[in-house]
Image (cartoon, rainbow, N blue to C red; front, side, top):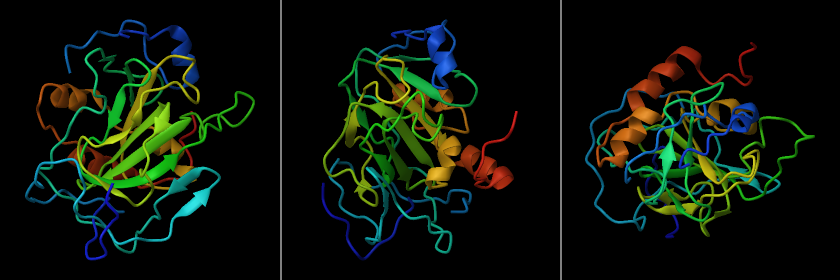
Length: 260
């Protein structure tokens, strides 16, 4: 991992879908198919794709990072909105041969990607690390929501989209809030921390970059990831920026989830 430069700024099972997962707030119906081998947001503007490679060569200016316990978050910078870029490479978030996921999820948009514990979790696209949690603070007797993800990490893509993965076994060294990463760079490994019901999987969510502890319900996912995962797994490059920007235009970054 190479430290960020100061001259630039960028935006940031195998059908194991048992009914108990649906009750956890991180699950899906039990009939999941098995897959084949693998801020105000603005509309993305055209940009050239970065050169290939996994070692970061550019980044954003270092800034102070707010830290709560073992959880850190890159500061929200509404006064300096980034300009999202189109045409960036996107890759499937789990690098494993044996993997499956379902197009739907219980209660809210998101996807549980089932793979063996220890399989690599990688950055979906070029971007800056947002929230990072290296400590599993979830307790069944505690608050349900903010800590459900256990060990987790988000990437604020240079396309203006936040990509969130949780229930990890570990977070890779050097993956800290504010660090710039490339598509395909290893972030950690699949696990079962937090409210994962002891099932190895990666909870994957796509959302606008509404950083902050109170935004957990947005971070977990607000648009359905499956159409994009389907594309990336086949080597395509379907981009969620427009759909995420539209959601953000309608809803903003509300601090509390909607009441049912």
